[in-house]
Amino acid sequence: MKIDLPLERYAGNPILTPDQMPFRCYTVFNAGATIFNGQVLLLLRVEKCDRETYFHVATSRDGIHFDVNPEPIQYPLSETEKRTRRAHRFDMRITKLEGTYYVCHAAWLDPWGCCIGMATTTDFVHFKPFPHLSEPSNRNAVLFPEKINGLYARLDRPQNVPNWGSLWVSYSPDLEFWGRSMPLNLPKTAWFTNKAGSGTIPIKTPHGWLEIYHATAPTCSSENYYLGAMLLDLNDPSQVIAAPKEFILAAEKDYECMGQSPNVVFTSGAVEMPDGTLNVYYAGADTRMCLAQTTVKKLTDWCLK
Ligand code: BMA
Image 1 (cartoon, helix red, strand yellow):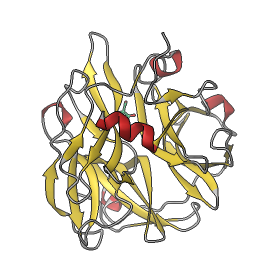
Image 2 (spheres, rainbow, N blue to C red):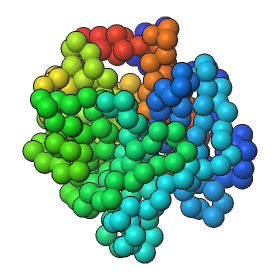
Image 3 (cartoon, rainbow, N blue to C red):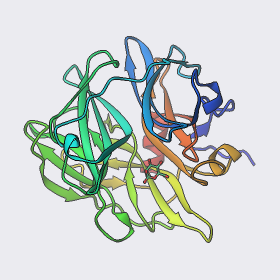
C-alpha cells in the first residue's frame, strides 16, 4: 500500500560517507545546515582515526551533491574550555540571526560534563567563540532565528536528570546570560520514554514554530533514536501546540541501523530549498550523512491533523 509519508528518504542515501571524504576518517555525521552565499552549507562532524572530532564544511548547489573542504574550520578554545583537561565539541547547529551566523554546540569538558558552547562566524572558516560556556549539564542547543518578545531564545536539553532529560526553552537579553527557563510540555509517546532533544532550527510558520526533534526509547539491544515533528507557540515556545504521537523517521535502513551507534537517526539541521522542498539532513547510526525530504506545509499539516 502506498502511504503518504510526512518525510521521505532520498533514494540515493547516504549522501556523504567516510570513504567519500578527501581525508581518512571513520565517521561523518550530525551536521549543522544553512544557506550561505546561495549554497547549502553543512558543518560536518568528522571523527578521524585519532578519534578526535573535526568540523569540515561541505557546500552544494542542489543540496544533494556536496564538495567537502579538506581543511577543518579554525575554532579557538573559549575561556571556559582553556580550564579543562580536554574539550570535545560536537553537533553544531547553525542559526542566521540579525544577519550573523551563530553556531551552538555541545562541549564535553573533562571532568565536568557536557556544556553548551556558542560562536559566530562570517566566513565558515574562522569561528569566534563566546568566552563562556554554559554550566554543565546541558546540550542540544538551538537558537531561534529571531527574538521572541524582545529576547533571544534557545531550546536546549538540561540532562542532569534520570533518563537524560528533555527540551527546555531559555531566554537571554544578550546571548550571554540565559534564564526564564521552562520545560516544554512535550507529551510522552512510546518512542519517547528516555530522552528528547531539539534537532533543527525552529522554522516560523503561521501555526507556530515547526521543530524536528529526536526522542529515544530502549529496545532489548539498543537505545533507538526517532525523529518527530512538533509545533510550538510563537510567543511562548514552551507551549507545545501539536506533537503527533507518530514519529516521522525511525532507523530502518541498513545505513541507519549499522555503524558506530546502531539504530540512530539524528538531525541537526534542515534547509528550505528554492522550490519549497525542505531538506532534512540527518545522520545514520552516527556514521554517515543522509537526506530526507518534505515541505514546511506538509509537516505543519501533519502536526495539525
Ligand atoms: C547523543 C549525542 C549525539 C549522538 C546521539 C546518538 O547523546 O551524543 O551526538 O548522535 O547521542 O548516539
